[in-house]
Length: 527
Ligand code: F6P
Image 1: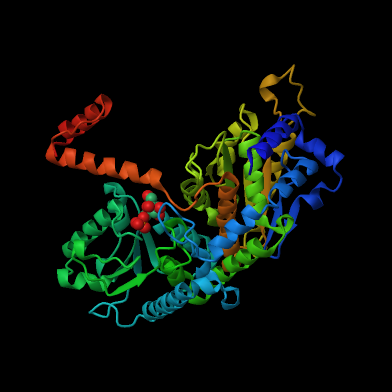
Image 2: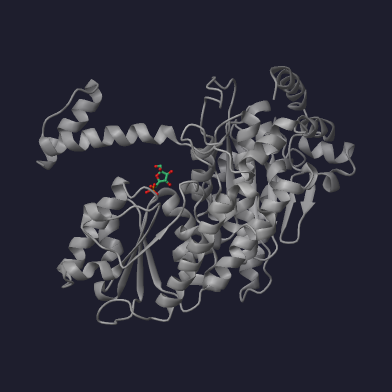
């Protein structure tokens, strides 16, 4: 987007900030039709935003620029759009159908086919309890070790599709290298019946390797011989081994370096998901995402949920100056969604330099936060209703009608809808600000509502792909490379140095505050 266009938009935004969202329904009688998209699985209502139809059309026309079309095409054609890591970005290919293929990505597609077949075989092998550990004991427990993108997707989807579990395993996730998390995760596990799935694209992530080393010791303490440990271990990585830990896993699944960690649940990284919901359901998850890939690629913007969500996020953040937004799923199955989206969106677009290496002026992509409704209503919603900040919200709710507890489900849906209304209208009709200022809610808080008609593998795949493409399109609006994460790397290097300071009881040069903290730890811990 050129500077002129941004300048105009910012001027318009200053005027639009004076508007009351609720009044726009009066001045724009077709607002609901204009500001909603009804796809088979998902309905998006974005009418409760502080945006007039007129300005919306201006925003849309800005996207009618060859830059956007070309940038998307480059990804689908397998160009190395992650230019700072010199990598292609092909996670969408993991779920694509043959007919959509670009000739440029044939090699990768063949590899994906092979990897998917290996995964399918492994799922059948484990599920049919064949030829696993030496004693032919059954694996009833699965312990998944991984962090970030190697954890959040698998746990989110495994939990969200609880209703699709087939003869489920007792599945645990070991994420942080944390003594308490480690102890409480393994304490009820029978080591002989435990299968460990180590997921790490790099197989070099500190937390994952430390946890694996601790698990190795735990196995031995539970009477499993060193030589037999590999019979309990599967790795999923970008072709990396566990030689440094001295384990020879009985199976190693891989995925391409063109799949970023936070986009990887569709690859072999999804093994824990496929084990819980079965391989056929895993394919339905991929199909749901593939359906959105097609919509993202082919639909005009007004019928394109990912693009619209990105455009609204851009408007709220860059033009209206809102620096965060909240994701509020009203469904316990989606408990991990806010955390998952935090990684997806913030690791992708949490940047202040654009693809040309220039500073981004003004707000870039917003901070993502959130929690589950309705407990969030009893915790953080006070802030949403009455603070000086007007933070936009994405409300997400599933309308499945098949629940055995209709009263409970009605409560979820009613509250979700009520909150979006209350945030928008406030209570100025009922409360006199002069008389009772403490009770006054000014309203005018923007929100989107996303309704999942039935939470199943296909619709969940769709929902997650919607947010993936939203993230990508938003990165294009800000001209950001969404696929690197250099910000995380620096902290990792410092942590290594401080670990060695503590181990050697010799503090290397840091700032005075940091040196004091390290010395306090050395003194208290004696290590
Ligand atoms: O900390 C950043 C990060 O590199 C994420 O992008 C990634 O998902 C996570 O660490 C885990 O990395 P790996 O899969 O290589 O263990």
